[in-house]
Amino acid sequence: MSITQEEIQRIAKNLAKLEPKNEQKLVGSINSILEYVDLLNEIDTTGVSPTISVVSNKKNTLKNDWEERNIHPSDLLSCSPQKVIANQIAVSDIMK
Image 1 (cartoon, rainbow, N blue to C red):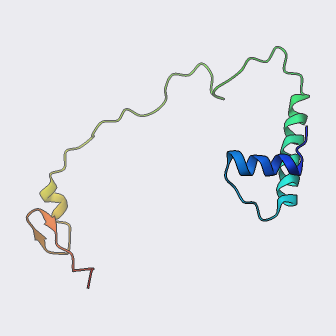
Image 2: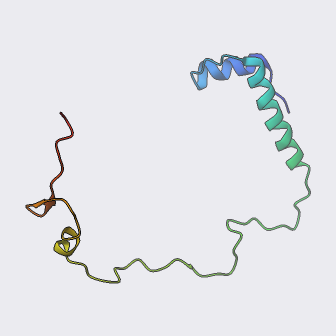
Image 3: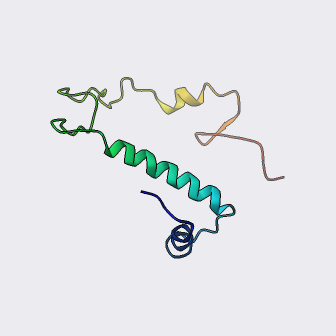
């Protein structure tokens, strides 16, 4: 399977609204991708079951998402070297 420069122009104009600067390079790149896809299509995959993950027969191994310790906001604010006003860290005016 390959693509012509006219097809690139039609796709760029009608579908993607692209204005490629180097159409010859784009045609070459797309054709090399399509050649690779054709190469993959030649592989015999009969008897190979489709997979959605490389890890099979496993339960979800993600850690449960819950808080392990309770930290009070005032403890966190006390760590700041800057002044704390109304439970917020005061910063200097950045819009000077």
